[in-house]
Length: 407
Image 1: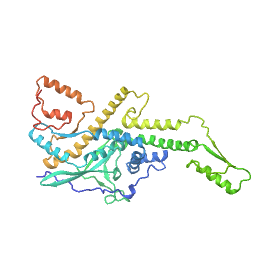
Image 2: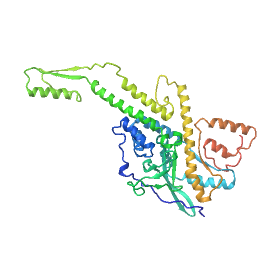
Image 3: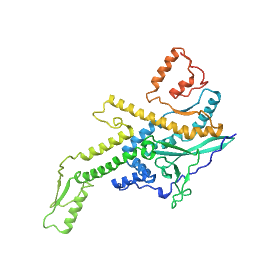
């Protein structure tokens, strides 16, 4: 018997309407960027979310480091642990685990939810399924942030924002239905998710990188190819001069030309004055700032004379700390917005709930925990197999409540 019935079916349109189309990064200027961020502070997220999407798509370095941070979390194994060793809690955890592991394309959804790190928040819609007197999860679908709006930047209240639910002329909106969406925030910005996204600061480096790249391309166009100077005699007619002009032009791309023996072409190498590596150094500087903001360091993304292996290990550990923090934050969101309502629908509200936990096997914590576990076994302590499964992330068969046996 169901304790409470969820809202079934999809609410948000899969296809974004035309007014949510891109273009925010086109002809971006400091004034335009300031305006976009100011609108974001006021709760209008459309232009900012569009800009952030385009930044990640167009800036290859930014896309790479952002993908690295996402995959450090999404690639880890997740499992469901019971609230206690009580038989009912174990039974509920087994049910939740079966449902959670049966959700299709869950890693894709988790990758989308990790967009909260860069954008400040992310949302996925839960498609509930009610059959045989039980509520399960049919799917969890990522939703664009551009479908949503905020009415209070200090205590954001999420509102649907798309044709069919919002009257664009009046600004009216529909509040999110209860237990229908997973709303993941990035922790930062003094609790305001509109200020928490890392791309807010990265946007300035992105802007200056674009300026630098345009200047660099102009520089290479002017100085990268030598000046071709064609000379003709005073007796040359218009046709001869036109032939010489075409020959000089073709040398720029074809590197071949046919001219008469009474004309000449000289190649004049442009003299470069000043620091001709300035544009390269500027581009590398801004890329380093992006790496620092997203990964907390640069040594694992760039080969440098100063990037010694030992220093790289230290910096990689810093990145591991960030990944562990991201994983715990994502687990908290899943437990609050997905696991808890799933339990409430089927078993009613409870004092304790099963939890989704991420294996931290490569985040530097497992070795210490396994050493402690070994010492406990050496002392003759009876430790349930469930504990080892939680530490290692390995799925063990058999009775998880049975004590581990020392070999």
